[in-house]
Amino acid sequence: MNNKAIATPGRTKDILAKAGFSFKKSLGQNFLVDVNILKNMLCHAGISENTAAIEIGPGIGALTEQLALHAGSVTAFEIDQRLVPILEEELSSFENATIINEDILKADIDQVVRELARDHEEVRVVANLPYYITTPILMRLLMDRLPFQSITVMIQKEVAERMAASPGTKSYGSLSIAVQYYTEASIPMTVPKSVFMPQPNVDSAVLHLEKRAEPPVDVQDEDFFFEIVRASFKQRRKTLINNLGSFFKGSLEKSEIRERMEGSGIDPGRRGESLSMEEFAKLADVFHKVK
Ligand code: SAM
Image 1 (cartoon, protein in one colour):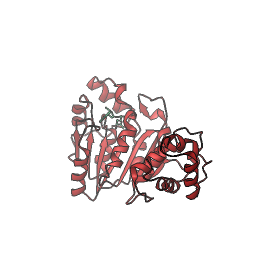
Image 2 (cartoon, rainbow, N blue to C red; image 1 turned 90 degrees about the horizontal axis):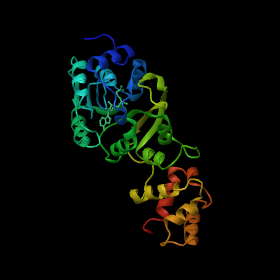
Image 3 (cartoon, rainbow, N blue to C red; image 1 turned 60 degrees about the vertical axis):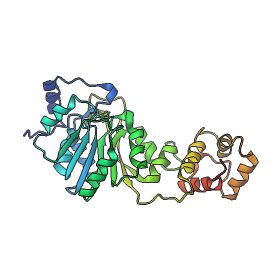
Image 4 (cartoon, rainbow, N blue to C red; image 1 turned 135 degrees about the vertical axis):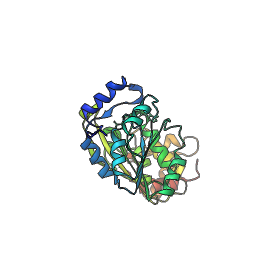
């Protein structure tokens, strides 16, 4: 076994050269070469020997190795078949690491999470995500209501900020509400682009999402609640009355929209970005079954 971590510039270069590996930009292949950042990330993720970790996109195993060292087990999904023999060799000393050569967007994650949850105290998702799938994969994991405790992912800083944003900030929008409906979101670390090989164009951040036992608001119809949220942010600079006026065009007069809003205590002249999740819940319920 090699004593030096995979997540170091020297070892990464050696592994890549030995395999004659060339990066595929379209798969978001930016490998981490700073082991301290990964160790820090695992602390924030709450990994212990009781954790079954699920990783998305192990690359050459930089994070997988740290998970195998600190978690009970790690199951990693990698789409790029060329990486499988490399991972098998580099992680050969870890009996608790399993590599699945599949596209995470097509894989049966539900079954994998449920099986791991049956045999382990807790399941946590940890990944340095390929950025092109950030939103679809996170939303799928959250909306499927699977039995895992948390998601800790390295993603584009700007997207992390949107997901964890509070009302009244520039980053706050329908994505913040979608994510925070299911989880408590925080950004424990930002990560400079210099710790990746090759370097991406933008800085990254670690986003930690701790699953909520229950949503923080009670709404009559979840799908409609999210529709109202999206409609309220459709044109950010417009007031709620104007955005909702377009949304209800043909089914409600503006005067009635105004009346209903006032009845629920929400000023029609406000903008979506100033509303808390509780206020969006009130707004959705006051229009429930109109559309
Ligand atoms: N975890 C490694 C690290 O931290 O160095 C690599 C991270 S790299 C940003 C993203 C990895 O995800 C790449 O190995 C890429 O091949 C893989 N990947 C890209 N799309 C994927 C998908 N749809 N399903 C599974 N893996 C994917």
